[in-house]
Image (cartoon, rainbow, N blue to C red):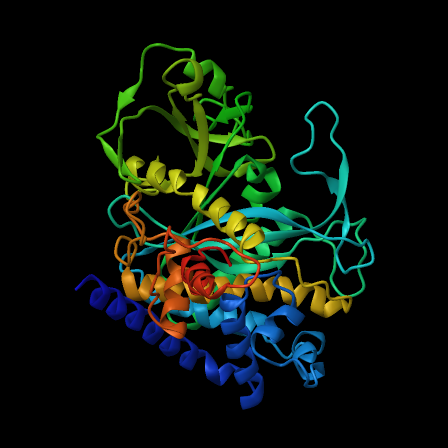
Length: 468
């Protein structure tokens, strides 16, 4: 019975994937280009080694055939990334029932081996010694991800847009240099444009991000209909709005207390109702101050939210300050755009975008396609993000967040939601057939001639492989 249920879940997964790909088909100008895109996607899932284009073509059996057309898919720009990304966003919006679309934004890097690749420049090395940080060759990107609607306290980040944010000192022939903030504002403007194009312009966007986006240029350039909630600094200088007793041309009122000054106060904390986050109950104490403004962005009223720290030693949670756009209610008062519990819940889910980065780089092979062509060096990275988005979004449509198959092992029955490893294993099981594990007999002995009894381990290794 369990195997029958797994077969049904795998079948729903493949049906959701095919239905999604069929909607993307009109974007491609030629049928053979679309067919190559589909086959390369299948090869990305089935490949065990490095996810280079050569390795994927070997998985597809194209060993003694001409590969030039497959490389031209990226070199000539025949993979229309912005168009297919737009179609995925349209499908994501259909899954949102309320009036808010929640996204997460973050910058990330892909390690490269040569400084002659498009967009590569010297950046501080990730994972180096904190007392003597070195430099390494990276491409810098901005990633805008959709956070799926909450289900049982869980969500999941799925890439919407993967945009180059190459540094001025990087090697560039095609792309222009831009900061992460500039790339973020472009991506948010692009998203608002897609929403208006499909008649969903009334929906508002909530973006959660880390402290790197608490910048004056970011607050001043936010598109209309976008709310930004970011982590702030403990010593952030904030000002209240000017009062009626002050001069009419004043932009700033009295100095507001810094987040560090607020969290040292013992009184004035309010307890929130219990929140379910990733299968655990969270109890938080917060302070809300506002409206306030930052120097240089007086036209953007903000609300300061300080979450009180708790615990001691290793289990200590430090206090966290956040800033979010304030909106005016019917009485003309500046208030929070959403209930406080919802804002903090989605801020907690921001970590999902870091999970995507880890999976793309460590398992999905992002950045391993060493294309020397300037256009291909950008498109192959965006390709990896798009393939990941399509595969995970198909899993979301087939299983939701908390459904799906469970791991086949007895010692671990899975968490409250399906894992990415379970998703990759399900795709392989659907295309290769249901796994049939065969235990090795303890009576067998390893000799120099008879290896027949070890042949079953090949199928076990393929069926049990979780990583791509």
